[in-house]
Amino acid sequence: MKKVLPIVLATSLILSMSAMPTMAADMTLELVVDTGCGDELGWDDQMLPGNEYHFDLADYGFQMWWDDSTSDPVELDTSNFRVSTDWDTGSALVKSVKIDNDCNHLVITLNENYTISEAKDLEGTITLELRDDMYGGTGDLYEDGDEFDFSFTAEVCNNLDDSVDGGDSRDDATEIDVEDNTIYQMSSSGWVEFCGDGNRLSSVKARLAEDKKVFAYFNEDPVDEIEDMYYDLDADINYINFVGSPSLGSNATVAIQGDYSDQYYLYEYTGGQLEEIDADWNDDDGTYEFTTSRLGTYVLSDTALVAEADEEEEEEVVDEVVEDEETTDDTSTQNPDTGANDAIGVAVALAAVSLVAAGAVSLKK
Image 1 (cartoon, rainbow, N blue to C red):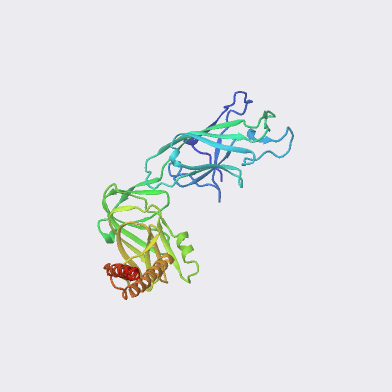
Image 2 (image 1 turned 60 degrees about the vertical axis):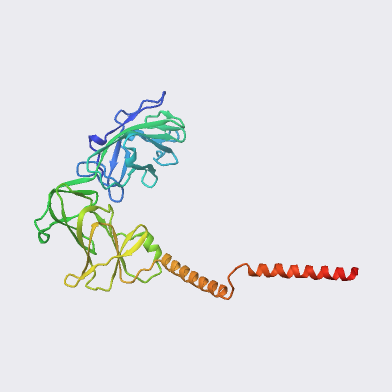
């Protein structure tokens, strides 16, 4: 399925060359959204932070050929075009703009941002520069270095659900099946329960204040650093990753499913380190429960995870203790340095000098 962007994302061709041949006046970039190629727009047709958007040239007159013939047209790829940008507003929103050679699309990737709840403008110019002489769809010749400028205007924002009405009690918490790219705002203070379709997270229950905003989306994607560290360990490791690490402003009760077995090990992954969580075991629900005011990345394993770095540090500590003991043994048999040995040496030297002098006097007589 293809979807043309609404007016807020309309683009137009600007002929920036002094002797640029005439081209179609309705030249535009068109958003492409289909299976495996590009993300969809937000609830209000805005671009969503962290997403990747694909565009192709909507006007077929932009097709080009290496020579004035009926051969296959030149594709939009990095061997034929260079791409550059000049953003007037919102440059910090953009991670990259590039040409995808696999699908021949212009791709705009936005930076992740979990706090934008009001639309921010993204305005500027995207430039395609020819790498060689080519003929356009109308037969006009374009030269190496010629540029085609596309003005680009869009809005960037997370989806905002500002209608969350909190429950009166913990048992009556308002249940929310969290979605990605979405900020949830409390319309009234009360209890909420964040949950989803994950295998391990049972719920997060908290009492939140009115107008409190939370990016509560989580996934169960493996953490590469942990996978690399324990790749040779025969362990069943699961992850619950709150991507925005949201601060809740009050303590919440987090419940993580343990398959009705209290033999798991539960950690929080923070600052590149695993820290074991002192969680309570709920035998009735088969969950590990703990309280926290900030949601992060949690790791559940059926095997104790001991970081390799920790093992190395322990070995270093043992080595240091052994070295200290050896040093203590060596020095314990030595007298303290009081300077007495030096004094004895001087006395012996003076005695030798006296004997030599006495001998000399005796020979003289």
